[in-house]
Length: 179
Image 1 (spheres, rainbow, N blue to C red):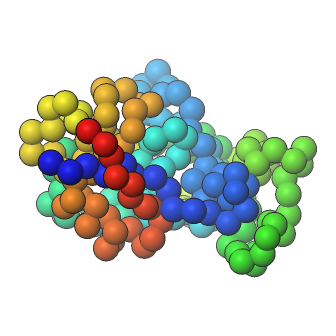
Image 2: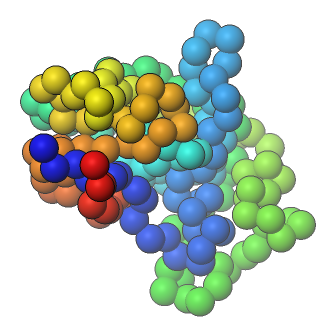
């Protein structure tokens, strides 16, 4: 079986763009939900936030659940802090972002702004794709992890890669995984 590591596609402006595109996650809360901190109202349909949390919008969740791909379940994330910042209106080909965050740290695009409940509602539910298998025992899964931890690498087989490439809007890329 050939496996491919799932990573975010390149974002403009290095770490600044990565935060704007993917946001951040924290450790799961007491109920097991992943806390999401990000800007909006734009949210890519699929992205990896934090170290390796695969997150999808509600619309993309519908497509994913009807894809026929195996080996995952979905859980709604807790939108802990959704800050308003319409960075998609900036020149995405420019060498630098139109605006740097206060203090200069990329995370401050989110942490330096207040939660905006209107923007949070506008983006709708966000879902975490939870893998059910590891590469050591993939069974018939199309999506697995290298180990049974949230910090392990996310992998897909050829079938999963092909579907995500076709449906993912270019937000992900895939690297060969040596087994």
